[in-house]
Image (tube, rainbow, N blue to C red; front, top):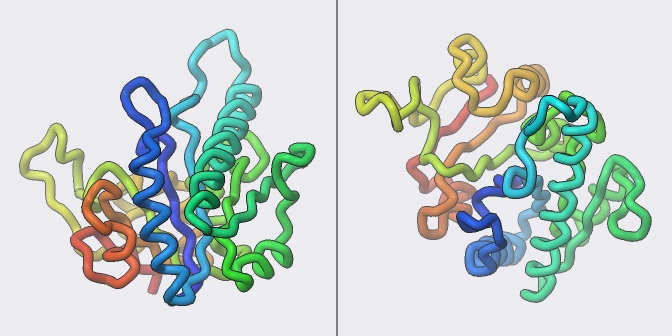
Length: 231
């Protein structure tokens, strides 16, 4: 496996005051740099939850609320990209709609070319359409650039049959199929993204970002998260 997409939550990059934690981002950059040295090609999708989550007011139209969320992901990608660059990592930020000179316009050909050149490609702005989450965005981009798999860095160490925060007897899966995820509505990613992953045979690995060397361990297979299979 050499071409991967990494999904990060916006909340994971920020503190309780929703300010960026540079230490967390620089640790991610360090791990990504090591993977680049091993000739991995890496795309990254970042959520916007540290800025905006869902429709926060009944006075805001859902479409407009989702557009605000798309812009939040772009701000996150610009910030994280700059910290990556400070560590000597070449990057590109691509969006599905024009953002003046802030980002490049997504095309498969340019994205793949950049990945092959050893650049980390940030896919910002979601799908460019309302009613689709960054979950759907990361699966869509993974399918489009023909990635080998998706790595979902979360605040939980894998997939459980119920919420371990409320059920102390929740069972954690080491491995399960995407069909089981859909049938049991386990919310690894949202349902639209799950079906897209199933139909395009895109495997996923779910792991806890806060664990030491979590990204490196997940990619090497030496992790205690959950693998979601598609066979």
